[in-house]
Image 1: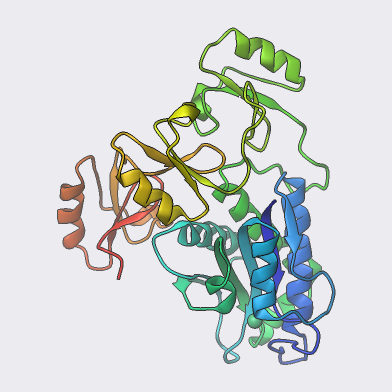
Image 2: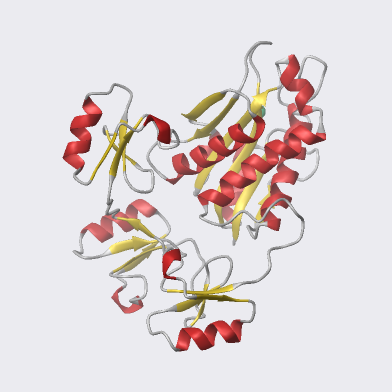
Length: 342
Ligand SMILES: [Zn+2]
C-alpha cells in the first residue's frame, strides 16, 4: 500500500520528445520524478516509481504496477512537444468531475505558480496510463521541450527543483496535508487529538508523545488520536488503510457499515439505497453525498477570482451560472455539479 505511484514518462529505447539541442524527455522526466518522490517522502507521502533508471517500461506495465502495488494515486510526468513557440503547462485527467480532476487541478495550479509559465489548464484525455489505472490518475506536461527557451530551463537543476516542488506541493495540498518544506528530514511525529481527521477545527491538542495524546483523548469522549498522516491510532488501532470506500451512517459508527468497495461508484450506488448513509474514504473523509453549504459560480474551481456568486440554494446558483457562458457551479470541495458533465 502506497500513497502515490510516480511515473517518469518514456525511457530506454523510447526517449520521448527531443529538444532542439537534443535534451531528451525521458532523461528529464526521470530527474523530475525522483525529485518529486523525495519531496513527497519528506512530506510524509509514501511513493513508489514505475522506473528509477533509464529503462523502457510499457504503458500497460506502468498502470499494472500501480494497480498491483495498491497505490492510492498515480502521477505521470511528461514534457510537451509541438513547435518552437508552443509554451506553458497543462495537466491531464481521464474524465471530469471526480478526484482525477481535483488532483489535476491541484497539481496544475501549484506547478504553474512555481514555474511561472503560461497556464494551459486542466485537460482530459484517453491516455493509456490514465485509462488503465484503477486509482485517480493524472499526467502533467510540465512545459514544452520543443521550445528552445523551455528546453534551456529544463537543463538547469534549479528549474527542475522548482517544478518538482510545485508538483509535490499540489499533491500535498490535494491530500489535505500541510507542506513541510523541501527539506529531506521527515516531518516530526505529531499526534493530534480531534473528533475526525477531516475536522481540523475540532483539534484540542497535538503531542509528540503518543501517551500524552491518549491521556487527553480519554478525557474527551468522541475524540480520537491521529498520526501525521491522518491515520487514527487511538482508540481504534485497526484503522483501515486499504483504499476502500465504506458506506456507513457516520465514520465512527463502524457497526452501521453496509458495504465496502474499491470502486467509488459502487459505494455510491449502495449508499443511495440507505437513507442517512454516506461514503467515506479510507481516512474517514466523507466523499459522498456532499452537503454543500455554499454553491459557487466560477469559471473553474481553481480560478477563485472569477467567482460571480455563491448561493446556499443550488437552483439559484444554476440561474446565475446560466447568465455567464463558460461558468460552472461547484460544491464546497470543488466538484463541478452544473452544467451536467458531458
Ligand atoms: Zn511524453
